[in-house]
Length: 269
Image (cartoon, rainbow, N blue to C red):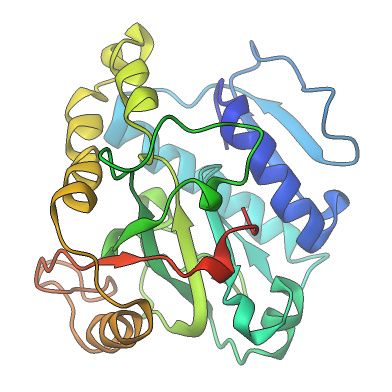
C-alpha cells in the first residue's frame, strides 16, 4: 500500500515484476485522490479509501486491511508476500536461485522472514542517489536490523501486526540466505525532503523520520564488519532471543551491527 510514492513504487514493480510477474503484483493506493499509474501494465492497482488516523492508528488500519486482502488472495495463490514499497525480499545471489524458486523449495509452515538489512548512506563516501542506477551499486553499507526481519511471506491466512513486523499469535522463522533489504532511509536528501512535507508532519511522522535517520549516522561513523560472519551471528541471535514485550519479534540486544554489502548484490535492486 502506497501514497504518493512513485519513486519507490517504480523500483518495487520492476523488481517484483521480474521475479514474480506483473500479473501477480497487487498495489493498493491509500486514497482515491491518487491517479492509477499508467507505467505498470499488468499490475493489479486498486485505489482505496484513505486509511484514517495518525501514524500508529493508521498503521493498524493499514495492516488489518492488507491482512484481509492477503486472505482473499489465498483463493488463488499458495504463498502471499506482504512488503512495503521500499522493501525488497532478496535471495543471496550466490545461490543462483530466483525468489520464486527459493520460496517454492522452502518449507514454510506458517510464515517466513528474511534477515533485516537496513541500507544506509555513508555520507563521507556516497552521494545523492541516482534513479537511473541500481540502488545497491550506489550504497554499500547497512545495519543488520531486527526491525526489518519481518514475516513477509505467509503460507496461509494470518494477521500481520503494524508494519508487517509480526504475525499475531505466531512465531517466525528466518530463511537462510534470504534477506529483506529496506531502502526507506538510505538517502539523506530524501529524508530531509520528507521532513519538509506538511502532510507527513500533520500525520505525526516527524519523530519517526528522525529516529530512522539514525541508520545514516551509524553507517557513516561505525566500522563495517564482514558480511558472511555477521549475518550468521545476527540470524542465530534473532532466532533465539525475543524482546520481553513481544515474544513473536526478534531481538539483538540493541547491537548496532554495521556491515559492508557484498558486490554480488550490486545489480539486483
